[in-house]
Length: 498
Image (cartoon, rainbow, N blue to C red):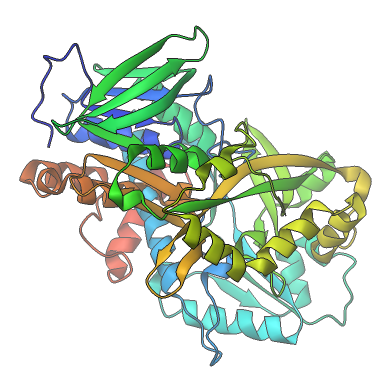
């Protein structure tokens, strides 16, 4: 695609909009695949990874489908669908390979700054939920990606795994839990900033903070003209590029709409805000060393899956519980209240209305979440930690998620819980929409984007060889090759000091 042309006043080959984990991953991969590429990165805030990639916002678990029960739905006949869990687990191992490659090549330093070993656990109570977890465990054991997971219904064993969750609990409660020792905690904010610190030192890469992309239009020669405003000085300028990636989190949808590509028609967004209870008692924080996920209440959306979550942020162990959902019309934590109304256009009005009518329970859920009192939040926490005291916790506001609404042949409009790459037919522009498990599967998402937007380049012998160096399992299925999985996990564990 590129066929480099430097005659147009130093126009970059690539423009990346947004300085989050997605742009960082794509920028790093493109510069390694083609070192001669010139890249301009525009970020409206004054630091990288300040929105959804920040550890205090949404990213930070290291989703590997080991403990997230919403990735293994139950069919009406009682069987468990493991397809999504297998895909996510494999994608996370692909991400681990790329991160290990970056560390080996000294592109980013000190792996323990962004990734640490931490068990991933699931916990449920009640006959039906225990039955579900047992069936889930049995189903996952059919795939070697999940070997090493332990299952127990013995309260004493579970207490060893998660003492805070079992203390003060009724001994007559029927409980069950799974424990995956090879889980991790990933600080995507630290990882993202590490990648950008390296990127900005490379020749041909320019990182512009405090710059907001206002307009983008494809010209007759196929190149994109981007209008950018310097938010500090007020200066405006135009930049042209052959390829544009919109990785602006919740801000991606408005920019996709402004691009005018036919593939973006019919897309809408439903913003959901989040809150955490953050533990402020060091003694309690030290007694919990796991990510423990529960089962969402009946009628609750997938985003509401409660978890008692150990995280490592800025070198310090933290303990969070949540998320508690909320509603705002902002698409970004530091966005505008007009984001949602301005996103409604003629081509997406029908899908958005249809999705809204079909998701009235979600609306009611969000209203109830917004109306919660501190006592209500503590009641939810005590379901998982019976001895919790209100004075040990404080409320923290997390980041924004914008769930994708899109056209569906049969359903007119459907609300999606996941991530999606929307690209133009000529491969000159791509936008990433959606939320979880985005950051954890960023590498697989970017590989998919490269396939969509650079089909000739990625099929070349040169790019194929480089991708194999970056990701040793590239082109092969970890879900189908147990020996390969064993090898790459051993290698990544050694390099990342897990």
